[in-house]
Length: 349
Ligand code: PEP
Ligand code: MN
Image 1 (cartoon, protein in one colour):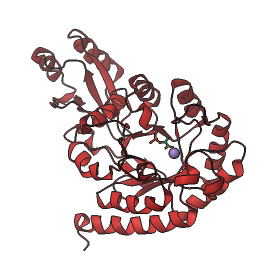
Image 2 (cartoon, rainbow, N blue to C red):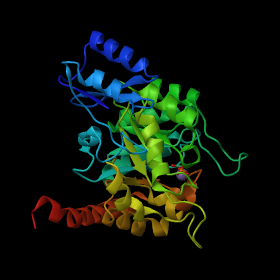
Image 3 (cartoon, protein in one colour):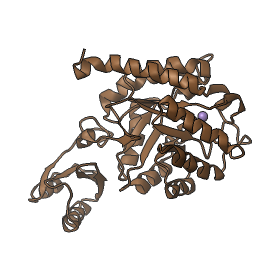
């Protein structure tokens, strides 16, 4: 990782370091942070001669070599001071709440508009709405591109940023062209490297945020963080990790709830953690407790499915969406847990 003395290298300086590392079979990937740009060396950066030549340049402050499978996302990385902000919330400073329908019903757009207004009223900062849906059974509803217009209309009506899952590059381009603010990588695609690469490339130089769900079958935490690393390595460090339950399921719950990995992730990476209690437990009645547990474990935010009329929703909504009243109550209580867990840290007892 190359840290320049100035906030950003000039094109001539970038060309110079690119040509030096190319001699050693490496390339340079700029990572654009809010304040300064740092330059990742992509490839085997162990050659001392390469490092010496870079360190000898008068515009280079230093070269950091972190021995980590995820150099950029590692807590010791220079990116650790990077802050992600969305919907008026800077992650880490206030609990971020993403809420809305699992799936937008293109035949009933008013449900989405009413849900969007209701979750805003309940205290959400970002509205979620599934446009394209991965399903357990391919013969069930897989979403509809028309719902993208409905999602963006929800944004216009509420003024809040919106989140939607993309499953392939075509959907990615459509979502970016429409102006979707947060791109969700679903549990079924957390290891889809070509999609992660495409997202990393497409969102470089934009402030689009990526919500990376933990894969259904992901084991070691390094596997999850390395998937985030792969997105960051293509240029955008605005990545949030989202535990959402793993397989095998726990009797009675849809998945094996994994909000308890939050502190373990935070020991290794600077990336914010936003837990999805809805898919973790899969039933509305259990969602609030899982949400509170997540915040107690140190989550920076929650992603909760909610619907004005869950039984008339589609996708997961009939079984796991909270009503706006239950969402409002959960947000109030989650903020109380947040205050309790952060009291010691900020010093205001
Ligand atoms: C969703 O958010 O509706 C969804 C399908 O999530 P996951 O990828 O976690 O299953
Ligand atoms: Mn869902």
